[in-house]
Length: 376
Image (tube, rainbow, N blue to C red; front, side):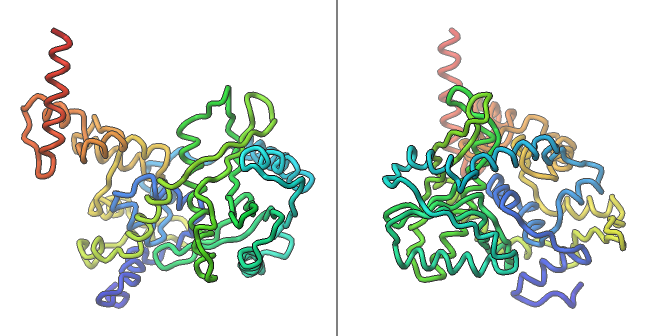
């Protein structure tokens, strides 16, 4: 293990954490999930090292129920085909409505037709030309291949569509098969789609910056396309992903500069699954669990819908007596107060605030006082 380590070079420490386990490539869904829990050291280290969390969870006996059913995948593919039929004619109709597209038609360019090995280079050339020429007519780019650096490694990403709008503005189009019923969609599904779209926005902005163009040519407003009500008729809405972009940038920067997190770990620590020739993990379960316990997790109920290690970390939290954890949004708004018991203790004065919690404790005490006055 020590042969992999070089002083000041976190790449070799990450390789040591991964050991003989093959590196897990990142896709847009996995990168988007990083932004769902930016304060989790365990996740940052495992994602930075490229370790498959789903394989680790199954080996530990805590598999997560992620993954779409074949029916859902088929439905999603059929809906995307409908939106893109006839050169994205239906999508063009929606773009006219949500973006105010003033032209009768746009050009359609399917980047996939050039072959997978050429798609990334071809994508760069297409967007370089579009940004330089500032063409008057819009262009829909289908199947472009973008890239993003994740802890020193390149992840390749394929957005559903990129629309080049008049005035030199690019818009990411994200096509999802969850329904919008009476103008409302599942908030958690919309949030997940926004995080994923933010990954594409960031990747395209980085591409334009590398080519010497203004990255802000890529709009922070993405076009989310979903089926309306219980029919397959698509409807489009604009979703502002600036918040998701800010969180994503912070998390990617944190993964790129993992030295501080790595410095707090034992030199011999590894998350290696020790797979056999067939890829099955062979490392003793107790040994792997002990290694993961050495990296601090930031478990919250939200993890159950975003992280493959959620059940392992939930069991760990319960073993430590944290059975009343607050959701991450509430926790962040309360300045890091993690549980219901902690919040109630600060509110009624039975618990002394930790350093930095004085203001939150004062607000909670005021809220408790007002609650008692209302009850009386």
